[in-house]
Length: 192
Image (cartoon, rainbow, N blue to C red; front, side, top):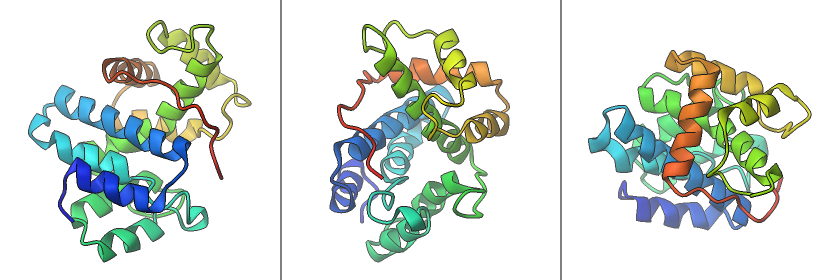
């Protein structure tokens, strides 16, 4: 498989049909490309986006083998080993033992769960828009463990630490990324 956004999207759609999962993959991909530019990896922007698109490739069909089945699927389709490793690293300590090492892997680890928390926060706002979302609103929801309970606060916090950022800085920068990329919340609910 070519390491292009188009080829990654085509592969993603073979294994994911639900609007929520496809929307999440697109959001993470957009955020990853934004951070590639912001952190001085602009020449690798598409590569970062491909990793974002494919990070949950197996989640819809193989949730019990998340980050394991995706490696097998990607190898069967000839995906670059760097993409396979990077995508799997977001499951570090949860479903696999591949630790995020490259800056891109650390960003993926940090923003995957956080984009979900931010998206859930957006849905609770009267505007249902990210345009007027402030960091303090997400910080408040972060502290409420019952809100968007499926979004791991531990992973988000650990991701901020991996990047050497404060939690508040990670949240602020991710909100800015989602604003800059035109984020709109998915209409469906997460499928398990």
